[in-house]
Amino acid sequence: MPAQELPSVSVIMPVIDEERHLPQSISRILEQDYAGELEIIVAVGPSRDRTADVAAEISAREDRVQVVANPSGKTPAGLNAAIEAASGEIVVRVDGHAMVPINYVSVAVSTLETSGADNVGGIMNAEGTTDFEDAVARAMTSRFGVGGAAFHVGGVAGPALSVYLGCFRRAALDRVGGYDVTMERAQDWEMNLRIRQTGGIVWFTPDLKVTYRPRPTLKALARQYHDYGRWRREVATRHPETVSLRYLAAPVAVIGVILGISLGVVGLLVGLPWLAVLGFAAPAGYLVLDLIASAVAALTRPHLTPGAALRLPLVYAAMHATWGWGFLRGGVRSS
Image 1: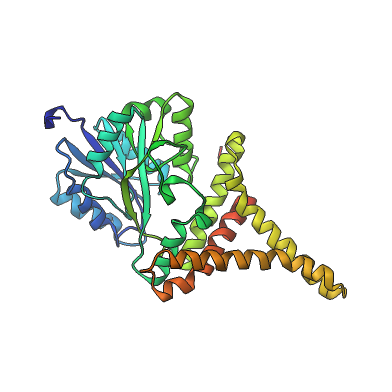
Image 2: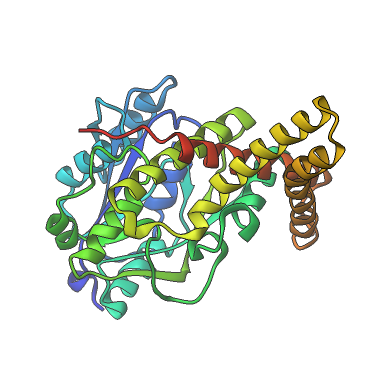
């Protein structure tokens, strides 16, 4: 298709505390092989680092980069601010720590046309730069770690419940009213639900692969997955029909481990060995599954370093425990 006939594209980026990755992330977008019109809208929230300065410096030397303010710092508010400033017929979401390949936009636009979908997305290809990040990346691409969602573990092209990031027809965003600002997390899943409820198609394709940088510390990972769990509970509360066994696995495991340890301790205190054995079976069972899954994950990715492989059991446990506990806590509903 001639360049003048290609739809215009706006890449939107909600960022906060992204000084480390933002220059490279924007550079990857500016290097796209897409022949049509392309702009980047960066919505900058209050940051503890130089994110705002970095974004302003890039915008000053790149006329295709525009910076808008996101005073609340909330992701959906930033996304909506960027969408409002965008002029493209196609809106492509990219996060400040995501690294897109050079053909990302061209493949996304082509897939929108061939699939007839309102939103297309691909694989969240987690890659770390340290042993801990490598362990998280491996956990995030395994079924034991995150379940069977295609955008985590891969799969064949076709309709999906949700996809990573998203490349949208602007008309679809306008139809559903943009992102729900009360959904501080899980806003992608909720947005895709509304697109599907209004007759649109959400399409997964393995041809789109985005490099994702995992959280660098155990504390940051735990906070991330705790928030994921709490907001997935919010989606389940608003839309009970979306609840599935996959989303209940982590909270059920947390309940089982807590009850098991409690029973085991009681059994020891009252002198009932059978009760102690019965109780400790639950946490012991999870530990065995964790170790087996970690060994399989390490062996099926040969380049994983010994340091990363040794961290895998802790990473799996942290992801499951914090996601499950966050889901059980809930309590994030906004008016």
